[in-house]
Amino acid sequence: MKRFIFYLLLVFLTFLTINCSEKTEDEKDDENLASAIDKAKLTEFTGFYFVGNHSGIPSVFWYDYQKDKVKIFWHSPEERVIDLLISPDNKSGYFLIQKKQLLKSSQPAIEKGRLYRIDFELKRVEPISQLEEGIQVIPFWTDNDRFTLVVNSIDKTIASYINKNTQVYNRFGKLLSDNTEIFDITKDGYPITKQAPLQFNSPNELFTVVEKNDSIQIRQTRSKKEIKTRLKEKELLQISWAEDNKHVLLLMKAKTKNKTEKINQNKLLLAIFDLQKKKTVKMFDDIGASNFRLIGNYLLLDNGIGRNSTIEILKLDSLDKTKKIKINGGSSLRKI
Image 1 (tube, rainbow, N blue to C red):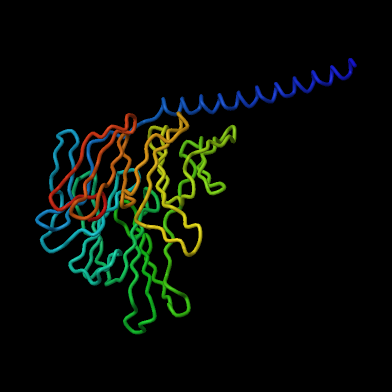
Image 2 (image 1 turned 120 degrees about the vertical axis):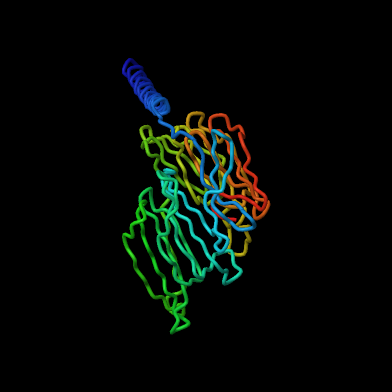
């Protein structure tokens, strides 16, 4: 009997030790996060570049936050801005222009296009390169220091050939590589471009976004504990970790359950998850495009499309809307 009681006591103490150990790990996770939030250094929000219509032509604008004024930054009566891409750290930028639209398509087709760079320090624009005639243009930032530009064009000799030209530039406009691949669409299919991979791990290495059992969860690195979210049957398109170390933004679209199910590809969902509160604190649905930007404690978000498009500015810590940028003819963080 004494031996049995001793055994039960041993089991109880072991169970208690394990629970205390797990609780300690959870507490350490919370302490590490609180420390990271306290030490976070936020970029000062002075303003941002965006695309807006000027005299009916998409041009580059600058919004001065301190003066609360919008002014034209770059405009050409013969060239229209088709895409503006700012680096993830908001310290560099490129934009594409074209003189003529070849095809009516959701993907830009260009003729006599050109690549420009924005010098953030000198606040000026410099031409980088002339673009070849193309049926599709795919620009994106690989990271803070590398900008990639892909132009697909139909071969002038063999119509079934697609020439895929990939150029990589650094943040200062220097061409790092220039490579052309030839695809026979009858054998190889249309060329696919892999863009920058999702940033599943937080920069401070405290969290990891995990796709598990058709749901999205956030795993704490130390305790391996997984925080459940209400985000289910969603495909992740973009993960952005805020500078405050407290928030992560998840851009998603609905998953198709079967091949016959039709999903509106334009309907996207942007969720703001509070890592300290361990819950989703704000959701935007049907935002129309994957255009949002984080600068310090501010979230910039496209709203609407075309001539009715506007840009909303929100504070992350309070989620209050502080400003709406509205220009006659439309405004957007990337393209109109």
